[in-house]
Image (cartoon, rainbow, N blue to C red; front, side):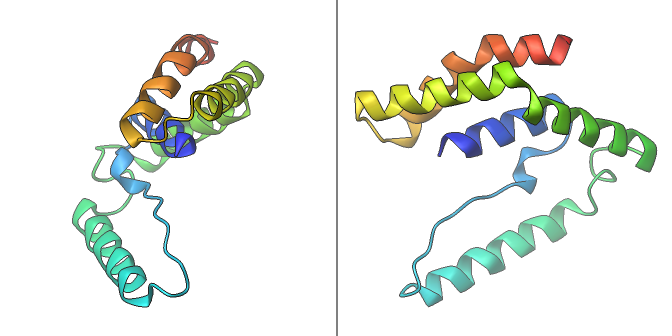
Length: 118
C-alpha cells in the first residue's frame, strides 16, 4: 500500500499523471474481479492516451522526467524513509488506506523534497 503512495507521489512530482499506475490485488479464485480490474485499467489508460502526449510532453522531455523518477527511486535517503514508514505502519497496526497514506506522506515529505532538489 505504501509503495502505491510513493509511486504516485513520484509520478506527480515529475509531471506524469499518477493514474497511469494502479496496483490491485486479486486471488486466483477471483477471476471475474481480475477481468474487471484489467478491463477498467485498460479503459483508463486508453482514455489517458499515450504517455507523455496527454501530459503535454515531447519524447525528449518525457525521457528526462522518467529518468528523474528513476533517480528518485534510487535515492538512498528516500528508500530509508520508505522503510521507516513501513515499520511505523506495522508497529501502529492500523491498516486503512487513509492511515497508511498519512504515515507515508509524513515520513516521506522531507526526504522526497531533498531528493527533488538534489
